[in-house]
Image 1 (cartoon, protein in one colour):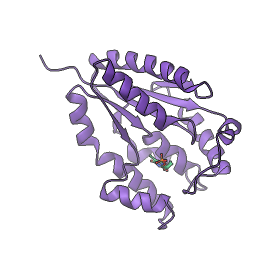
Image 2 (spheres, protein in one colour; image 1 turned 30 degrees about the horizontal axis):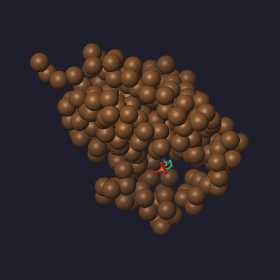
Image 3 (cartoon, protein in one colour; image 1 turned 30 degrees about the vertical axis):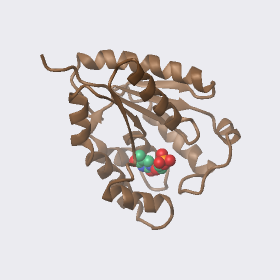
Image 4 (cartoon, protein in one colour; image 1 turned 135 degrees about the vertical axis):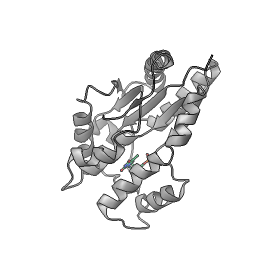
Length: 212
Ligand code: 2DT
């Protein structure tokens, strides 16, 4: 019998919501319970495309806005064969940001429609669940200063949050909103419960295609 596929689990949210911490905790918890799981993150700054993106985010280079949007998308597409292979091997992938960050961040810039921003990512492997770690801009600010990278300022983050809210209205995606203002362990339990359900569902369902 072919092995059951792993689940594609995505964590999204504005800066400081705790995505990376929660991704690590989830992978550890799944592994400890005997479920194969690995973490991925986008942008994946290790590839050639990822290095161009990283230089842009660190403000070491400037890139035209459409161009960088397409690079973020290309950075996901270049990893699709690896993602599919791992999922087919029964490995659950826990992903820190995905196409939703892509669409939300670029469409928060002037002159970009959400529709245009979603197009390059249409057909990507569809997550079995997308958990949005919700934190108000006021609470995010209480968690400390923003860093020095591009996009790390409260005005832009508010615009990004509005775009995420628009994306979450799409019923074709299995969104779960997580209250990220709770303590780390409570957030973790919440995320783990949704993930276990997604893993069970994924076992009997083929991987879908995003936004189509
Ligand atoms: P972190 O590496 O700290 O998560 O920051 N971004 C991300 C985009 O603009 N488009 C995308 O497609 C993705 C995945 C969000 C990465 C920064 O890059 C932004 C914050």
